[in-house]
Length: 313
Image 1 (cartoon, rainbow, N blue to C red):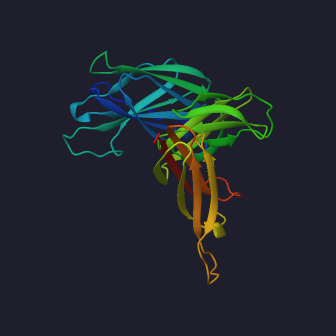
Image 2 (tube, rainbow, N blue to C red):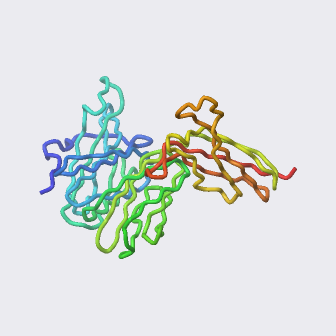
């Protein structure tokens, strides 16, 4: 059985809501057995069609901004046979009497896999419509990954290349399926901070990747000429096991090394500087990326992005 919102919380038939200039969409998936949920805030124009994914026995809940002061809202004109309930949530965002704004929720769920097209219409007028394409897929495994803006993240999918994987939904993230160390892997890159969901499928199963993109910690802008070495150094401490590592040289010649600070008293834990020596052979704008991590640990604790402008003298 799928747990859905009780019908007695559905929208009254005489409720009328005008469309806002924009709507806020929060995508929530509630697992009826584990009672877990997650939210991915996004913004969409009213007329933009949406495409979302949800597993069988789960719910997809859309939260749409409405103007309750004027008594207006959205309605489902066509649900394509999928179960659907809707209601207003007063406690989510309490408002003063006479002020605008309220949250209108729509819940969808299905016992069967497939693609459903749900048409939303604003009661203000037939022209205010948008379509939700909802793909209901089999229950899937979940993985977590994180990286910085513009930094590529690699996730090993299997120990052996026994099946082909396909990206069903990239959520705006640049994705490609490849191999690493002879094993199938997903490579992900995104330039915008935020939380993303990437859905993969194979012949045997589905996988959901929750990707967190955080800001770059250090951004540097350097200028140089072709063939001329430019040097940048950053604080480091090799005694902690953390070291800077170039993960993307941007097509430049980049040498890096660690230089400990003078330590005449032989103090434990004394740090130093990590030095990057960069040479470009021709004019252009290049980006060198490095991460601060321990070799035996997954992920990194800091990131460095060096933008190099190379101009002829």
